[in-house]
Image (tube, rainbow over all chains, first blue to last red):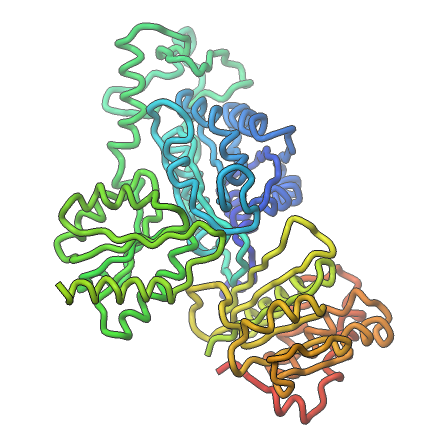
Length: 384
Length: 187
């Protein structure tokens, strides 16, 4: 029997995917446009033996998620811009202490409380650099409700595999959108289990990594083994150290566990790029308007394709570079003042000129605006 | 063909649910549908807008820019959204509203939606379901099975009879002549 297609909201699909991935703890402080995630977690987690807790604020929510995760439970929180700012300090703690968890940010418009129900992609750079210090980040961004379900499972899988917080960077467009989805048979899904180590007796090297590997196995708290977790630079026993050699090796390992596995982590979607001289680069919900525009541009005879980062951090630099030889121009479209633009410019270097179309007034960029920009770019090229 | 439908009224009238039900019925009928909404910080009484895009093909851009259908249950919503319509748009309004200047009366279907919910169905809160019944009959969108599936998935168990009654009462507001004139089946 084919699975039934039903109407589902992006935020709801995020919860269903997370539960399928094994998420059994959610702590949060509801905020538009992410509120439906907390609502559905409150409803669904008790049904599957999980726990939902509404905390007093976002700082505490993030702390609760880290605490739950170290006991061995897959944990998630969800928020939007203002709450994402508040979670940053503890996200950094999760990076350094290597605590797997998923932080959903359903982006909304503006700094501070801004425009609560309006779409934006203004947190792209915050997802990378929101917490201080050099740290690794994985961030994934879905562009449909169906993809939200699958991709949040991948967020949990990467989080467990690399022992790191993963940012699930949604936006109001996808979070609040309802569309038809087909939920896969749970038996078809690949779910990473946590790499757990128990009982190493007197050898309390909880952050020890075998030669040639980068991710230590995790010991669940509260199951008989006592060890130390800290936000300070630490040695393999988990205790703070001021030894520069040990600290330097730790920070380097944290970066390398991501940098050495880009092939595993980075995913892009490419449409009609093989013969294209123009690439539209776009991510998240905005990519839907870009896809409409690309199809219309093709109908007008323009050789345009779409390059959509699904893994938005690390930025898919190698994938974009591989496309550069065939391209004459790139158009970056995003709902902000030019954030992923900086990564695209860096990747394109001076080899391919990059134009920009952004919007920050809380309204969506319609396909017509993108099409007009593409015509203008092509017109300028012919005029030269 | 791409249907861009806008449902508008006052928060609490259930216009978001009406748009969700139409989208759900479309999915049940094997069509593509995307639904979204926009609202201010206030939950009740503020102007409320919801949108559903329908197509037989995959829907990429998900928002409504030039609606070819508008439902308006308050004067404020009608006045606000009438100017954005596509030329051939169908406009369904509660018959207590005044058609604004600039809107061709031939494209307007004025029906006693709120009065029917209150007096015939017996509950004003069913006005959104009455409207869905009327919209479906006027435009000729879905068969009864898909429409009922769309409603059933979004109402509390035990309220089915009341909602079927509201759907039927809504459909009965549209005459055969009106249904023939306004029919826009999805091609």
